[in-house]
Structure formats: structure tokens, C-alpha cells
Amino acid sequence: MRFDATLRLGVYVFVLLPLVGALLVSFVVSPEDVEAGRIVLSPECMVKQLFGHGCPTCGMTRAFMALSHGRVADAAAYNIASPVIYALWWFLTGAMLVGAVRASSERRRWAPRGSG
Image (cartoon, rainbow, N blue to C red; front, side, top):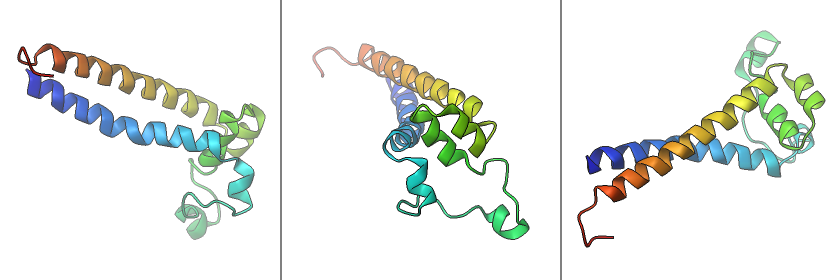
């Protein structure tokens, strides 16, 4: 039972780290930093390079940054779906955090007496 809790904790942390990392970056970096080329977080969209128009996720990075800075209208201009995706991102981050805390608690509960 403890191994199962340890495995689940590992999976939760594995998923949680990039979720939290993306949110942290979105609070620190502004969309203008990306647009001006001062910060490059990802390569240009391959679909846009090949076909001349963006994919459904184009603008999502800048939209997350705009949302993290409280600029909903700017975010919707970057990508219309961004407010919904951003809310789901926060929900998933919260769910992974709750799962990690529960797995950690369960892991400690099954630990042999006298061990830390």
C-alpha cells in the first residue's frame, strides 16, 4: 500500500511541476517581453510557418501571461479560448496538488512505526 501511495505521489509531482512552472513564468514574464523578442519561451508555431495561419493554440503563451497580469481582453485577443484553458489549467494544478498532499499523507500513514 505504501508503494502505491509513493508511486501516485511521484506521478502527481511529475505532472504538477510543469503546471506550476508555466504559471510562475506567466506571472513573471509579460506578453510584451515575448512579442519584442526579449524572452523566447518556445519556437514559432510550425503550423503558422507551413500554412501561414496559426493553429488553435497560437497565442496561448502570451494569453496566459496576459491573464496572469489581469488583462482578460488582451488574453482573448491573443487566443479566444485562453480564459477557459487558463481556468482549467488552474483547476488541474489544484487537483494535482490535492492529490499529491493526499498521497503523501497516505504514504506517511503506512510507514512503519519509528521511521520518519
